[in-house]
Image 1 (cartoon, helix red, strand yellow):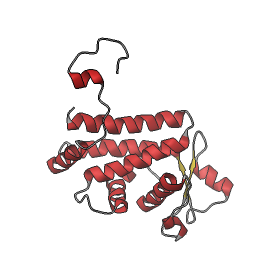
Image 2 (tube, one colour):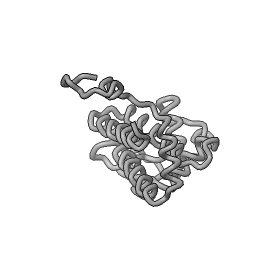
Image 3 (cartoon, one colour):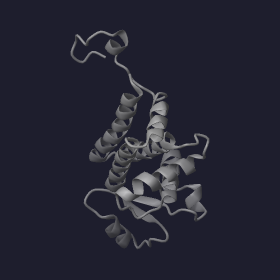
Image 4 (cartoon, rainbow, N blue to C red):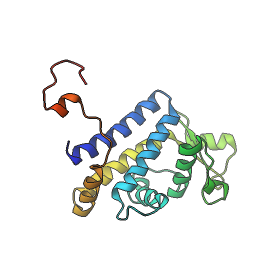
Length: 187
């Protein structure tokens, strides 16, 4: 399997399944997929693989994601939210506890983040209410923007494709053995 195919299939699968999770109201798994997808995109585009995860994450979010969809948060707010979701399934993180980032609380469906914040009596300085659907859309748009930039930036494209060669892949048996799939649904 080519690195380009691995990259395309892996990222598209994460974004697509996050959307399925949102549709099924499985919001925590959707957030886990989105935040790990952002982590991966930050790693893919990073010049320096040894850079801190927070720096790679925030750099990708600032450059490719925040400008594609209006989100009322910073890249550091999103990184803190990522830490809370991935490590404790909560909005709590060290960054939010020390006041360096605002905790993010999620809304979904037809309610707007602004309406929810107003009802909760929350202020923008203390926390962020973010629609899960908006976060997912911003992630997908950020991925699309990254791919678009990579089509004209050879160094970025090379970096991404080289790293995609390390991706976990599930290769059907028939592909491994070089045989056509003879049975419907065969692995």
